[in-house]
Image (cartoon, rainbow, N blue to C red; front, top):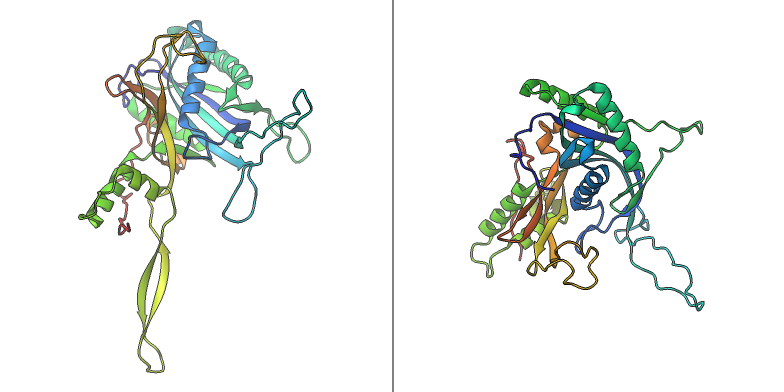
Length: 353
């Protein structure tokens, strides 16, 4: 959904819709053709759009952006070693009794908190009205899919008794910047322990500059894909160290291996789609999922994200993602306004072709 306000300015009657501790079972773990693990951020912007359509305009909510905090992650994969395989399920037998083919599907169980930046109508400025609306939204989300997964009730406690699901909150943000910051900090403490996914496009650009500086005569020059692949893996590099022998014998050289330094928990993530074709009229392409809207062929767009503790965030815009569309370039992309601290520097390493 489009955002009609600047990313660092909150609209009038701005509020946060918090859906805490959602237990999602069998969510899609294959987030793009090149990445797997946590669902793509587009899955949560898609949930935001689906929730807005289901609630309708009469609810008095206008969704702006969405943020996600992960408290638990359990991928359904085989254990042991560096090589992992998805735990696949066998489909029922076909009508003639033959064995159906196994479809490659990656699944993951999640424990997440979703935070939506919303704009309220005047009817929801009352505390009781907001509490009733939040309860209604909580019941609505309980029957929806999140990244293809099902929303499950809380697990029982150690004594076998059912835990109470934390209530959804619709928090009206204060107009004063200092009070708004205190509100957000108070909410962030409620999301601990957990990690929030933010954008680190700056690290990707810094890595590209470091690769180009380390190999100025390389042909071809390193590209953004090289920088993205370099940040997507753990690089170990060998260095030689001269060691003096205590017996007086000539010194020897010892090889030591060390991993590259990184500014935190970096992960490769898909952030949207880029157009591969013109925009076709509605119903012009056979087999489209929705024949009532225009259709376009696209491919995934990738960037670098980072998992950080919510208490390190300073503003709601650093947590949430909003969808943007560039008509000239055909780029459908999710934008996050996280700004790293000044002390959070990246140490470049030599480029090895």
